[in-house]
Amino acid sequence: MGVVAPLTSTGQAYGTSSYRNFVLISLTLVYTLNFIDRVLIGVVAQPIIEEFKLQDWQFGLLSGFGFALMYTVMGIPIARWAERYNRVRIIAGSVILWSLMTALCGMAGSFVALLVCRIGVGIGEAGCTPPANSIIADYFPARSRARALATYAMGVTLGGVLANAFGGPIAQMFSWREAFLALGIPGVVIGFIVLFSLEEPPRGYSDLPGTKHEEKKGLRDTLRELSRKTTFWMNIAAATVVAFVGYGVGNFSAPFFQRTHGLNVAEVATQISVPLGLAATVGALAAGYLTERASGRYPNAVVVIPGVSLILCVPFYWVGFSTDSVSFALACLLVANVLHYTYLGAQYTVCQGVASARSRATAVAVMLFVVNLIGYGLGPIFVGFLSDMLMSGQLESVQGGAVISAQACDGTQAELLETLGPAQTKACQSARAQGLGQSIMYTVTLYAVGGLLYLITCKTLQKDLTSKLT
Image (cartoon, rainbow, N blue to C red; front, top):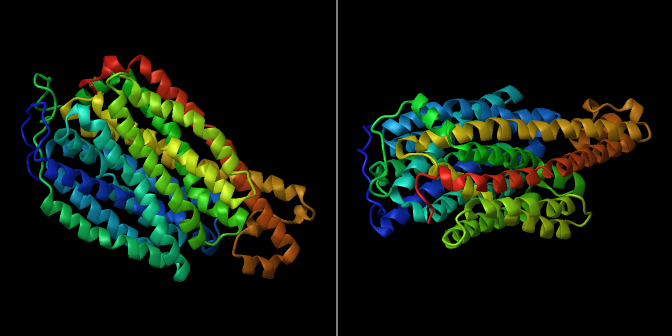
């Protein structure tokens, strides 16, 4: 993998401005691809649920925990390699692996086979963000990292936009399988481009002169360093709550609009999800620029901005997921997404800011371990389980509900009409839509908890930073 470059601190940005921006754009493209392959399963959720006759909690397991388990387990070991070896090569190999596994998802013939392929995607994607964050911290000095990391974080939202813009129409024209094949294969090419075009920077190059570094740092030493940083753990707690809600609701947003408003896969993707993804991108990027401009006067801006925004987004989400009007729902959700995604760059900026140069990849991996295991792993299962439970309650309240079980409602509309008849099919579809809608409404309330945790972080942020953000 190549031995890591020696530690040095100059306080300057590394490389020319044009090449530095090329590296940032390249890593943002990789992160975008990361989320295209991660989010795609949510875009085609309803066809998968219908083909394999899944309950919502089973799809939550498939889309969430199945991916998150190995993503989190492999994250820390790969991050430790990134502290010692060439980070560019690690990223390139990871891109190639997860892209191949995404393509294989399109060939899965059963729920179990698809789950195994999703686990493979998780293993590959574990090698992306920790080394990428570490590289960005070495290319950009502390005063510029909020904007750089906010740009990188745009990969989350851009990935969602592109997964919907291409995956939805492809799935509607052909099937969900072709969507996985079409969006997975190009990543192999991108992996080789990264391998041969990005330069590994010296460790700690952009830190201020005199910054204390250690040539070697074991996992125990890194965890001991981080254990003393209250800000690090508060940041993780806030990001975990937001991820729990975001991944849980995000993986079921397309089925919600299909069940509640009668839209098809392509309509949801292009008319709802793409605009929402663009709004989220605006929120993430605007927060980065606003943080950089405001930090001189307000040093805690990096956590205040997402803290306030996450609290404000809750009522917009409530209205968006309860109105009968698709256009009004979209308008409310656009505002909610701009506010909600202000946290993306902040979670990485804080994480990098409190960790020393030899600990940055590991610090990000530890954060992602908790955030993804709890947030991504359990969020979709929670929303799905709550949806199934509320759906059962709806079935019991409708006429004839006593003879309809939740399992009897599994399948396509044509299959239900054939087995249950029109009246009970309508009851099934109504109960399933209302159950999911109520589940989402209850879950989005937790965004306010994440916002409060970010605001509490103001108490310790300045004390814990290794490099000031101003």
